[in-house]
Structures are given as structure tokens and as C-alpha cells.
Amino acid sequence: MDATRLHSFLSQTRYDDLPPEVRRMAERCLIDLSGTAAAGLATPLSTMIRNHAVRAFGAGEGAPRARLLLDGRTASPLGAAMAGGMTIDSFDAHDGHVLTKGHAGVAILPALLALADAAGKSISGPEFLTALVIGYEVAIRAGIAQHATCPDYHTSGAWNSLGVVAVAARLWGLDAERTRQALGIAEYHGPRSQMMRCIDFPTMVKDGSGWGAMCGLSAAYLAVDGFTGAPALVIESEAVKPLWADLGQCWRILELYFKPHPVCRWAQPAVEAALNLRRAHKVDPAAIEAIEIETFHEAVRLDQHHPATTEEAQYSLPFPVAAALVRGRLAPTDISGEALGDPAILAMSDRIRLLEADDLNARFPAERFARVRFRLKGGQTVSGDTTPARGDAENPLSDDEILAKFHELADEPLGAEGARRIQEAVALLARQATARALVEALLTAPHVAGASSGRKQDGIVAA
Image (cartoon, rainbow, N blue to C red):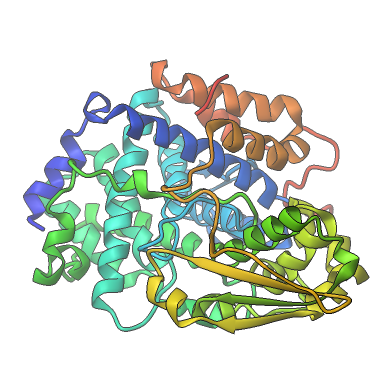
């Protein structure tokens, strides 16, 4: 990719240049990420990382400060972006892209908010949306390019950091050379953590997106000071030039999926297939003796039958399928708390056997499918169709479904009024001379009883 052409896209694209469907998708992303962040506040991961950001990433005297996402306390912009990214990532319900096998917006939005807050002056609503889209477009292409050129499967932070650089370069008006150096720094320093290690051993390290947000902002600040970076191979190498040739013409943000359930995307085809089969045959869960699930290799690796933590439940396939069958749906509360010890769910999870299917392997990652069979008491077997997850670009959630998901996730932690403020701010954003209402709504701590601020006691949408 020619650095000058990329810089022209970053600096010259205007809101009016965005097709209507791209503008609408940006609003869908904002409302979905906001709901996921709200739900994430209650996780131990989010509490720990927000406290860590305040303690370890505090801004020095005279340095820029930014408020933490839905927290209100301040840190350096790097710390605020990191904490926001990990808060969203802590509740695995955010948007993603099949060919990147990961997530862009989880880093882009917290970094954009941190930059807007640290600047001390508000940007317009259309400019906020345009910067968000630009971040997605660069991050998604960088992710596809990395998978095409690197032998290992790295977490999203390894490439969404470049989307963060794109946002900073636009907002700060960086020239082509400083932008090129920042992209090179971000690619070189991005967290190249191995994703399948977190699949096999689910812990709070997760998808590296908070570190990607931090790394991208760090790279931009360093480039401003004259720090130089190695050329970003995911942008400049000959092998990936075709991926960048249609930048500004083909909008990759339109290829996003949205999750109906707060678990790993790879588990969701099986959840849908099991629920469809239960409904089609009116199966009483108590009548199920055994379950076989055929799916692709990576999903088979999600073999956590008795998760002890939210992270293990999110990176499980048997457990969310069992919870969905026992309870008739997979609710946000089914991946934490009392649900993790529910005897009926655990017994159902023990009845599930995962099988790798060659034909489904061949369709991954562009397509993710599962097939489910129930063996019922009495010897009858019922089988379902080969099923994708809901919410893919080819099978999208409606605006009403996105909004219902937002309120299911956000109304309790933020309060109905706090959630309404975010919904209204997103709906009006494109017509606002300032994005201040949205920024304030997303950077202010919830004012509801029992809301988790992270402080220790001792110290798309229609409005």
C-alpha cells in the first residue's frame, strides 16, 4: 500500500463520503460496543484493569488525561484506552470480523474516546463517526493481512492497534511520514500473543485488545516525537497490496458480525443449532440422554464442560449449549455467578460430545457452522441442519435486535436513564455539531445503586 494514498484516505475522507449503509453500521457498532462495555463493568477483569490503569498509567504533571470508559476516573490516554478495551473484551459480546478471526471496535472506540477526552475540545458528531469507520477499515485490513502473512494465530491486539493509529493520525492531522512511522511502531510492538493458548487455557489475558488500544496510542505519541518504526508489513509488503487496493471503495465494516450471545463466536453456531433442534422437535431437556455436536476444529478446542470462571464459560462450547437448552435461551447471566454451579446445566454439559467435521473445517474461517444430534431416552435420535451463527453479515441481526441486546446488557449496570442517554446520543450523533453528549455518557460512572466503579472501599438506532 502506498503511504501517500493511505494517508489521503485517513485525512481526506469525510462523513459525506461514507455510503448510508456504512454510516448506519457505525451507529450499530457504537450501540453494541456500549452495551457490551456496560455489562463488562461487573466482571472482576474490568474492575482489576480499571484500578490498574489508574495506579500504573496515571498521567504525569502537565500530561494529557482521559477518563476511563463508564468509570469517570482519569489516567493517561494510553491507560484509559487499555482499560476500555479490556472492559469491552471482558464480556465477550462485541462485534467481530470472520476473516480477521477477531475484533476491531473493541480497541477503536476506547482509543477514540480517550483521544477526544484528552484533547479538551469536542469533535463533531459526523467526525466522530467518520474516525470510527476509518479505524475499522484500517484495522480489519491489517488483521486479514496478518493472517495471510504470519504462520501463527495472534490475538486481535496485534492488528487492531493499527486502526487506533489511523484514528490518532486523523484527529491530530499527522503528515504521511509520521503516520507511516506510527503504523510501523504499532505493528512491531503490537501484542503478538497466541490466541489458541487462551482458548485452551481461558484466563483474563483474553484477546489482547486492551493492549492493542494502548499500543496504538503509544505508537502515535512516539511518532509525533520523532520515534521511528520498521515498515508495517501488513500494509507495505507486496503480498498484501491487493487487500488495500479497494480502500475507500469497498467498506469492510459492512462485513462485521454481531453476537446475540456473550460467548466466543465459535460456540454460537452450536448454540443456535441446539436451540433450533429443541424447538423443531419440542424436546423436553429432561428427555435428552446424549448430545453430539459436529463443528470445526477451533470450536472443538472450546472443550470446557465445567467452567469455574466467566472467562472459562465464554471460551466454552458445551456449557453455553447446555445453559441454552436447560433455560430455553442463553442470557447474559448464564456465563457467571450461580449459573456456573447450576446442577442441571452441568449435568447437561456432561452429556455433550464434540466432534470435528472435515467439511466444516474446510469452510472456516469465512463460514462457521455446527450440526447437533440429540439421543433421547427411549432410543430415538433427532438431528438438525448444518447451522450458522445468527448475526453474520449474511444473516444479520435487525436494528431492533441490536437495540434489545443493548438494553438487556446496559439497563441494569447503567440504570434505565443512563442507557437511554447513550441510545439517544448515538441516534442523534450524525446531526450534532459536537459529540460531547455521547462522550460524556460513555465516560461518566453509572449513578445506580450497586454499580461497579472499580474503586476499592478503602481508598442505529432510533432514539
